[in-house]
Length: 170
Ligand code: SF4
Ligand code: SF4
Image 1 (cartoon, helix red, strand yellow):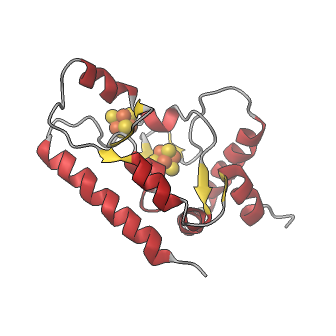
Image 2: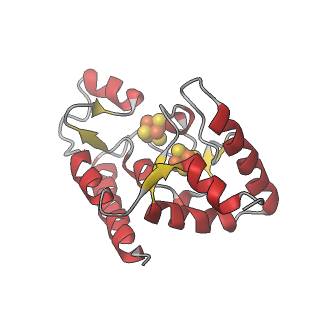
């Protein structure tokens, strides 16, 4: 059973945290056109089945030529061994996400949430924090997000989900 409401509740909770931080810090780095995080993925994104089902709706709604481009990039990604990687859903010309409303949870938390052992994820923001900026920020807790994600079903690599759903031979 597709528990869409559960995923959307998670989206809403993250959006509320992001809005609070953004409203309190008008100079926050994350903005349209800042795509460093989408160009520096440490690994192929891993998604729960609920995230994949939501993302798949966004992919299927794209113009066919864009979906074909993404299909080629994801196929290449499955073979790529070097890291970091550029997200295949990124419009590299505009620095914008082509599936923004349907993007995975990690894309929503990036820059605003931290994990106790790992610190901040975005190196650009981390550099400002190291210089003393954003000392009043109440960061989101990524451990909580991970616990909630673990309740959203099977987790697989983006390339695996994609091959199952969009490979014409299946
Ligand atoms: S997380 Fe970092 S790279 Fe990504 S949009 Fe925010 S400031 Fe830019
Ligand atoms: S899905 Fe969108 S927001 Fe997430 S890494 Fe890819 S381009 Fe960036």
